[in-house]
Amino acid sequence: MCNRYQTSNDIERLRTIFGNAPSDWFEKTDTKYDSFCKNSSVPVVLKVNGEEMFSNFSWGIVPHRAKLKKDILVNSRSEKVLTSPAWKSSFRTRRCLMPATAFYESAIVDGKRHPVKFELRGGEPFSFAAIWGKNG
Image (tube, rainbow, N blue to C red):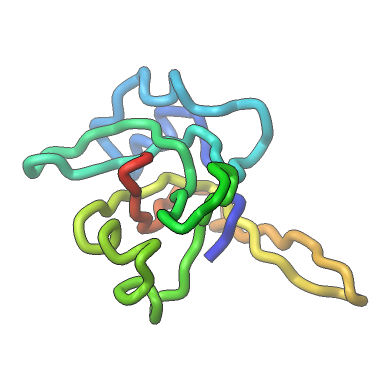
């Protein structure tokens, strides 16, 4: 999974996938850069007592074994999500959706890493599954 992505802060565009998104959903979202990186304040959608909740969380999980708070994890391999102590509890009980308009993966060309942008035709919003930690 990516460790950098973009989303629209145009609430009307996001209402095409989240019809009841509140107008103030992005008040705490980081807008410093054109994409989100570790520790950014990002928009999320949760189910709480069967109802959608729109919030902003800090992107990344600080594992218990981390020596520094900056040792943030943002992605996991699916085959390890139920066995790794960093992800296991969150995967079982703390799931959410993250709205996006694009994400980036790395490609190595001539020994150098380059970001490759993936997006839907027309730039329509979508969401991807995520988990959140107690520090979220």
